[in-house]
Image (tube, rainbow over all chains, first blue to last red; front, side, top):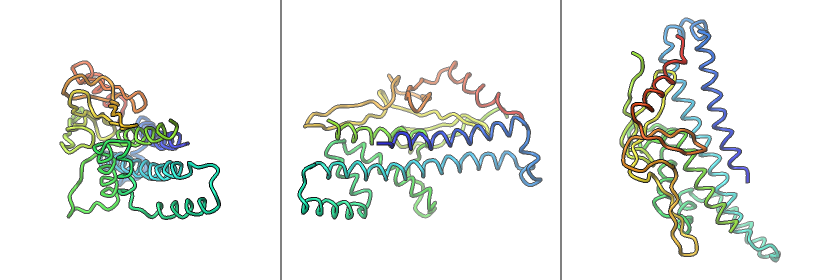
Length: 166
Length: 94
């Protein structure tokens, strides 16, 4: 299962962006980009940093959702010598699961992971949704950094993966 | 201004507060954890087992997490604060 590699790649891209900003700044090159940017370096640098961190959280969540589904399919595909009928039912179930709200899928995992942890993953989803829409009427949910998003999402998948491999 | 300490909030997922130390270009995140820090509890075959997410959290306080792979948290003291302040300020030539 390549979720660790995929999640790591997102983190590496975020680090690359940080290093790129450093290199630009150290060489004093940002000022020469344009008059508008040159006169507002601090503003654009801060905005750039915040936006790239937000995009990182969105990317991490997308990978998490994809692998959560993949791991869930592994539970369904347990029977190797399945009949034709059984395989057909399995395929139909997989098709339906893809359309489930992610919250319902996460709730299933309360069987093996405590509800507080599942709740924490749902909070990350709410924050991810808020980053997408930024609906000020709804107010900001609990915040999380991209580093902690990586840690909590990868640990969650690790526990599911370990349960499958028992 | 060398750097600023910016309160991010109390409503932080997995922690009880966050303050960032940084400049416009780079920052370090301080998180307030209760003793032990966040845990994931698994329920395999009826047996509950607690897994600490971070190591190094032995009392309530402000911590800085060094890396996302090692997940080692350091309690913020004068030494940790000074070295992080140097990290966020010394690399930038504006």
